[in-house]
Image 1: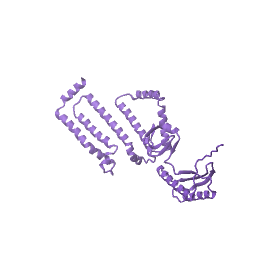
Image 2: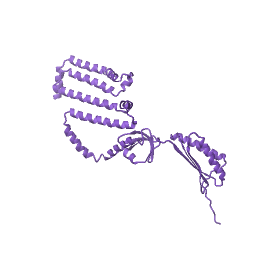
Image 3: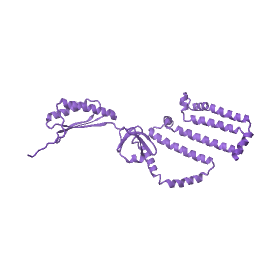
Length: 348
């Protein structure tokens, strides 16, 4: 009933002109909000002329909202209101401003603003590390904002801090896995065994790294499925970073027919080596073509070298072309390839 009585008193105390004045103030501040926000941002970014870029600025929406809230605040103060209503309005206004400031700075530390952050602090690390740091900063911003709002509402922070300490001790054991994942995530960011965009192999799976968070790393596998792996599991697993390869190994073992004459075998190996030396994608410093052994099926030869083609799909194409050329050379030498054979003796 107190609220209804207060509302009735406000309606009867203020005149129609008072309400019109308040409404006009709200409309004016709402209309000038976008223009005034644009002008304020231009003061700090003089070189920026495009409106679309200004509207994407981290502080544009918070500024526009602040101006609109300020209009409501001034409009309410233009009316005759009970003292306790004025207190509630003032407190609500301060809390709104605190939330808008927190939102503005949190928005600044978003992924779309990474380039501006790098220029501002002269950051030289990779985006994964920057993303990890900005996420931590955003958490700190929201925690501080929460404490400021609690204090603004009149609660005793000393008692709250003590309560948080007891609560933290109670959940410490339950949060062990989370702590392990966060520590492992920090280790991944600092050691940089991989970064976002790398193609990695992890035990029985492989894929492209899409994101690294406090708790987990997201990898998109060749089937286009996104797999979220806890950071603690990654730190314990055997990891292969295919993107960081500087060269790929080509290894081919062939078995020639057992009755192939030795001079022809040596001639074939020499011609294969010449073929490799004439290929611009073959690294010439470690080419090996040799007679490995005489097996039960025939004469085993090995072709072993490295190529500077590291992209997997391009490497498959290169490997196919090399196999064609080597097979064509064997056929031109009129040498047959052996296959697994077995001789059966039948007792009469």
